[in-house]
Image (cartoon, rainbow, N blue to C red; front, side, top):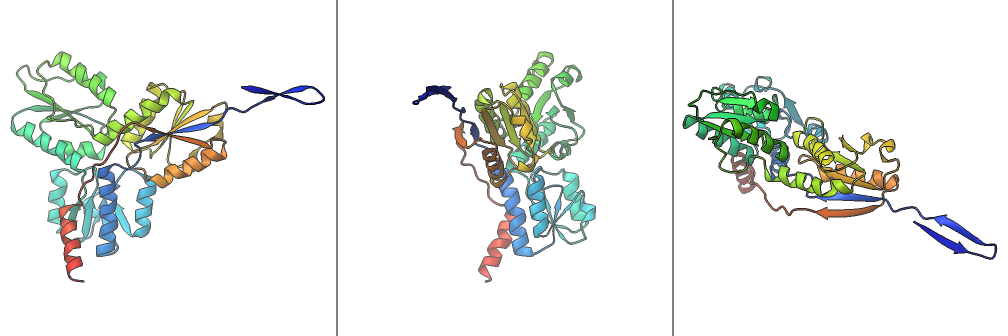
Amino acid sequence: MSASIGDDIGETTVAMEQPKTVLLASPRGYCAGVDRAVVTVEKALDLYGAPVYVRKEIVHNAYVVQTLKDRGAVFVEETDEVPEGALVVFSAHGVSPAVHEEAAARNLRTIDATCPLVTKVHNEAKRFAAEGYEIVLIGHEGHEEVEGTSGEAPDRITLIENPEQADAVEFAPDAKVAWLSQTTLSVDETMETVERLRTRLPLLIDPPSDDICYATQNRQLAVKDIAPRSDVLIVVGSANSSNSVRLAEVGLEAGASASYRIDGAHELDPSWFAGATTVGLTSGASVPEELVDGVIQALADYGFGNVEVVFSAEESLTFALPPELRRDLKTAATTK
């Protein structure tokens, strides 16, 4: 775009720089389950004081974990690292029945911050197993959520990670088979996996409702809306956050010229934006908004000062705090 400016000497053509824009996805960031889990640890620290032990990362975000550490939370890998009789919070990703048994054996006081949508998948696994079904669980090996769900019916669950593995899974000819999934997967890849399973298992039973949670689906939808217009897509989220990693992948598939996942503004590389006029920006479901704000400020410093919010879905779901914590908060309030 150019404009001609005349003066007494003659005419000079001045190139006008094309405005640089950030397309800010909405919804983004914290989902109801993550918010509930983080607030659970914060309220536990307020009520009981430090230390509050947390099995695994409460949510998969390095900044959130460090912030809670600074307040007195102690993160452990297993319950045997928690002193006998102490308080331990189970993370949003859920735990197997064996972990509950280990905690009881050590007389640990427990607060279960498992996301209710993960608990729903646990209940589906128990029901299918009780009804004699073999269960194909679609998810990522080693992820805490997969470990927790698998522990509900270890003799009945077969884990597969992608469509290619769906072509190789084998069951007895007379087996009843159902499928479940991790809540934070790519919707498109999961559906491809299910369809490939169904070509070999035409009587495959679906879960009673979507296992991939509303927040994962909505954030992927929002990325699909902004990706085709984005020269560069930035996803804020930690490397161990399954839903954040999927967002970066979905963005590329949906048309973004380049896609990068970062923990925060400090990981931005100015070279990524050479020649770019539009940057898409979103964040995973375990990312607090202050990290997104930091990226917006950094992008403004690179010349991307215009921010356009792109609305794709409305979210209003909230979850109550775990009942054991609500009980103690109520008791504390009445004794003041």
